[in-house]
Picture 1 (cartoon, rainbow, N blue to C red):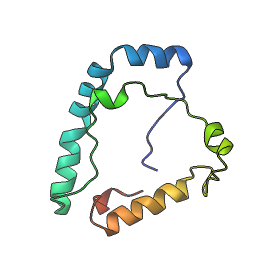
Picture 2: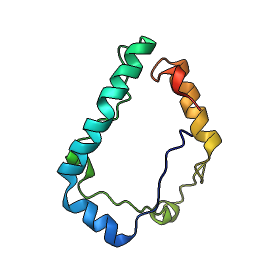
Picture 3: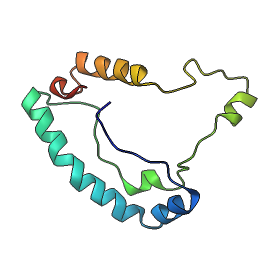
Picture 4: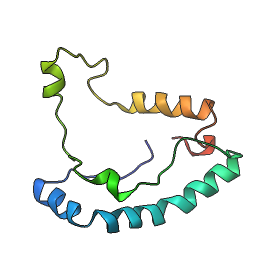
Length: 107
């Protein structure tokens, strides 16, 4: 949606990333907190539950790869089994409408 480049990590890269979660969280926070605050201030958003900040503890024991197999075994059915650009845009529109996300930064 925002032309963010991404790639899928192999198991080896996932293990390497887990080795320095504190450093990774600090780097991500330094990169994203100031621009996020500036965007919100420009749009007059003073209070939002959305934030790019992440604590390194939130990454502990985090599986980067996920499978819905365990959910399927319980009988749970996903109402949206696949993430699409349109479903992400819908969430983004809702957040903008609720003044939780800067409207000038939608794509």
